[in-house]
Amino acid sequence: MAGGIPDAAQPPKGTDMDRRCVVTGAAGFIGSRLARTLLDEGWRVTGVDAFTDSYDPEEKLARAELLRSNPRYRHVRADVAETDLDAILAGVEVVYHLAGRPGVRDSFAIPEKYRHDNVLATTRLVHAARRTRSVRRLVYASSSSVYGNAALPFLEDGPTSPLSPYGQTKLEAERVCLGANGSELETTALRYFTVYGPGQRPDMGLRRFAEAALKGGDIRLFGDGTQSRDFTYVDDIVRATRLAAEADVAGLAVNVGGGTRISLNEVFELLGVLTGGPVSIQREPFARGDARHTGADLTRARERLGFQARVAFADGYAAEVDWLRERSLVTLRTGS
Ligand SMILES: NC(=O)c1ccc[n+]([C@@H]2O[C@H](COP(=O)([O-])OP(=O)(O)OC[C@H]3O[C@@H](n4cnc5c(N)ncnc54)[C@H](O)[C@@H]3O)[C@@H](O)[C@H]2O)c1
Image (cartoon, rainbow, N blue to C red):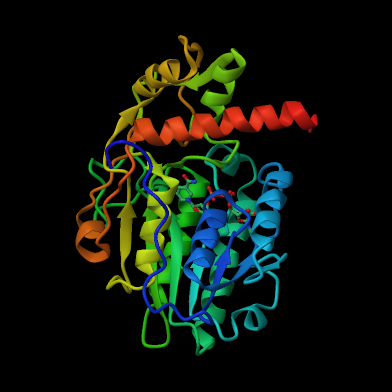
């Protein structure tokens, strides 16, 4: 949408205050935003998150703490791959499965943790959802990483060829989900394209670049900056995820992208404008596992979900940079 970030979705008419859903990964960047939206809509939300060591757990604890201030939110601190899921799913209508171990680089060093958090956790959750009669639909957060360097634009029915253990485990988990679609449970897999905005994970490029620029330090860039991404604003992702719980997408993978491909060199130019000066870049070789370009074909998202991204990259990145500025002031004030 031109001219800034639209307001959060209004509660749909006739929302039943007792409808229950589960958000796994509710202390994460996207999961916490989704849980907040669902609470605003009137749902009772059980968030499941183990606060794993994928990045500073303090960020995750702080997000869960905010959610806990809503009496309709309940947090279960547990590993989806190990806990008693039947107790958590009883009476629940929709499961949003966002728990997972993200990030391409680390997946080469610790593939077993990726297998545990992405494949094992998903398999257990899908089996439990299938045997829980109240659960109508499971929405899984898959990734554009399943495509690797496929031809652009990436098509849901086109080839997949992950370049990293991360992409591989996301694809395996997606197959587990979609393979379980049937009369007992409807499943759908959303292939998210690089998500950004306030609250973004600390390991992600856009946040690292902005933090370095705000501190006046060097941005570490892997590659020559011509690589490009279909960046997607977090509120757009949340809206698509909500739509997927109701829409005619059972048994399908659906791309969710921002709709515009932006190169990292374009990102640095914008960052210079947003931070009031040119940014300094330290170039390093291309990293293993990173796709050169990502771009979603959004026909299915438009036709089946009724989804179209609303937030332009310049507006969304400005919101993220503002959030980081505010955050660094809070850190300076509190010394933490
Ligand atoms: N951020 C993106 O650009 C992006 C893109 C494509 C797909 N995704 C997928 O979306 C989901 C959310 O991503 P995010 O960026 O919010 O990541 P995040 O790391 O901020 O959130 C994931 C959360 O899941 C929790 N978790 C991980 N394994 C768990 C387990 N076994 N049991 C319980 N909790 C567990 C973590 O503690 C974390 O809080 C992930 O599945 C990710 O693969 C994200």
